[in-house]
Amino acid sequence: MMNEQVLKRMKEMRFYGMLRAFETSLQSDTMNNLTKDEMIAHLLEEEWDDRCNRKIARSTHNAKFHYKASIEQMYFDEERGIDKNQVMRLAECTFIKNKENVMITGSTGIGKSYIASAIGQQACTLGYRVVYHNSTKLFAKLKMAKADGSYINEITKLERQQLLILDDFGIQPLDAQSRSAFMEIIEDRHSKASTLITSQVPVAKWYEVIGEKTIADAIMDRIIHNAHRIELTGESLRKKYQNKTEISIS
Image (tube, rainbow, N blue to C red; front, side):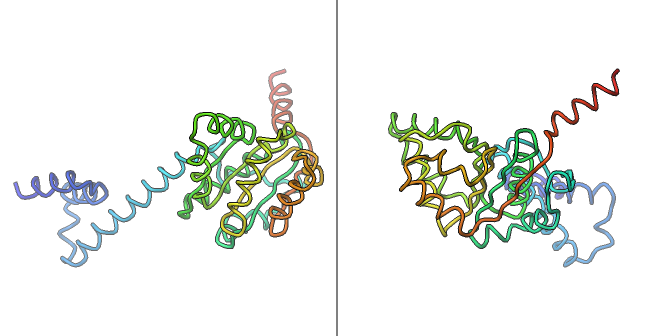
């Protein structure tokens, strides 16, 4: 009866890790081999781990990554121009702690978004606030926010993130509104938080994408001076795997 009351209280207080550990111990009698101090430490440790795991799951869900990706499953190949040591260092997320940026460029299908998502999910695991946005969709969203009066709220949300991932930047040149929003985003984050940008367009041509030379210079100066660069080469992985599938089928 006492155990049932304890389990009920744990559930009501949302001590789910502790609840599962206590239920398991009752079924297996493992608690009988522990001292009182060990039992309390065990229950607290299980609760701590459960809360950490739920926090990571919630952060990963809220980040809205393009891919469910991980560093462990990444395909490293010299032909792609990936420096494994560089990627592993970025996965430690010291660049976020140091408020540095990351720029990943390369042709379509080469794996830019996957690498960005993998680094972002690793950052979530380490407790950082992260959000992913397709650049074109974000700028369209901010235009709508200007119209309905929620712009400041949307910009503030972005500013609060310790890592902002802008995927597929430069698909189309920025118009005046998007250029202004981009400047505001980068200015807000400069020396305060990290931004990871992926693009099919080489960095040297981002000035043309941004337009308005004075603004482009201001934005690029804030992005480049403390940025880590990954420049991917080789053929599209999607095309490569598709060809392999077609060969195996035929």
